[in-house]
Structure formats: structure tokens, C-alpha cells
Length: 141
Image 1 (cartoon, rainbow, N blue to C red):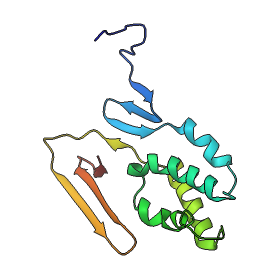
Image 2 (cartoon, rainbow, N blue to C red):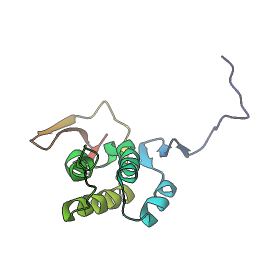
Image 3 (cartoon, helix red, strand yellow):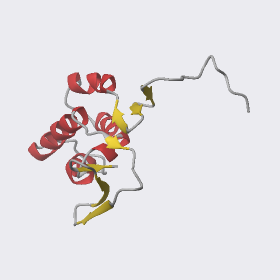
Image 4 (cartoon, rainbow, N blue to C red):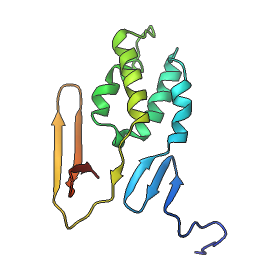
């Protein structure tokens, strides 16, 4: 294996890679990636909703209750004969769009501090989140 110093990034405080902003202490979302999501119109067919859900799913670890919020939109991907944007589905699309643009930072874990594991299971979905008690408050890791 060879290391190319021309292609490497060294001594940066933060680095943008694969749609994320990585710093020494956290992992965030690249806000430039979401500019297109904000101006994108409501999906008009199954292919458009699948594309949006694929994009949103990539950042699912940043969105609390992602499965529950996205459930109405995922139902559009089923083998329903008619593509219909109901009030619930419009609300789900708008909620996901809002949460994508306000996604929280995920912190790099400090293994000297305690962790809390939150698990939620219901008829709508299953979820889990690992949090860590920080000095000020609790943050997702």
C-alpha cells in the first residue's frame, strides 16, 4: 500500500467526506448536500419517493424516530396500485425534510464516561440509540 501526500488531507480541523463533516469530536451532516432537498418539489411517483427515502435513509442515524416518521412514505413503495400523497404522507415528507436540515451532531464517544442505551419497539418500528452523559447534558454518539 502506498500513501499519496498529494491526495491526503492533513492538519484540518474538519473534513468533508461522503456527505458528512468529520471533526475531532463529532460527526455532522454536510449542509450543502441538503440545498437540493429544500427546493425539491413533492414526489410525484414511486421512483421519486424511493430516491428521497434512499437519501434520507443514508442519514437515518442523525434523525430520532426515523422509522416511525418515514413509515407513511415507505408504504408508497409497496405494491399499491395507485400512488397517492395523503395528508399523512405529505406530513412525513415535510418532517423528514425538516429533520434532515436540522440533524444533530453525533459525538465521538469518550469511553471514560458512562453510556445509556435507549431501545424502542412498537408496531410501527424498532429503534435504538446510544447516548453518552456529557458534562453539560446527554448527547447521541
